[in-house]
Length: 150
Image 1 (cartoon, helix red, strand yellow):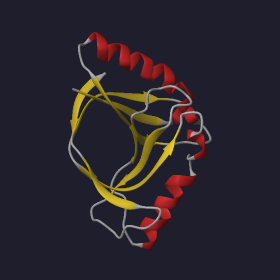
Image 2 (image 1 turned 180 degrees about the vertical axis):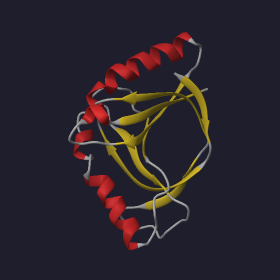
Image 3 (image 1 turned 120 degrees about the vertical axis):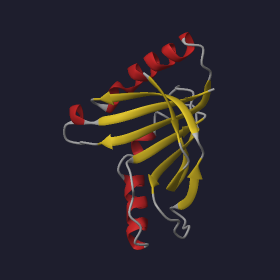
C-alpha cells in the first residue's frame, strides 16, 4: 500500500451506469468503442486505461457510475460514445495487483481495512489503472488499484 497524489489527467471517456454484477458486460466492448473513436479522430492514447468508479459501495447489485478513460494529449470532438474531460487531482492509497481480476474483491477488502486502520476516510471514488492486460492468461495482468482518501 502506498500513498499517492495523481495529477489532473486529460482523458477520452465513456461514462455509463452499471453494477458490479453486470460490469463484465463492459469488458472489451466499451474500451473498443473509445479506441475506435480515437482512431477516427487521429488521437493516440498516452497511458494505460483508467476505470473510474464513482459511488460504488462494493455490493453486486448497487448501481454506480463507471467512467472508462483513455489518457490523451489533446481534446477531440465529443460524440455519443466518447467525451473529453480532465480528471481532477486524486489523493489515494494505491496497490499494484499482479494477477487475475477475479481476485480484486480480496484486494479491495485488504485495502479498505488498511485505509480505515491508518485513519483515512474513503471518498467513494476508486480507480483501476490497467498497466498490462492479458485476457488469455490473467496471471500476467498488472493492475493498479487506487482508492481516493481524505
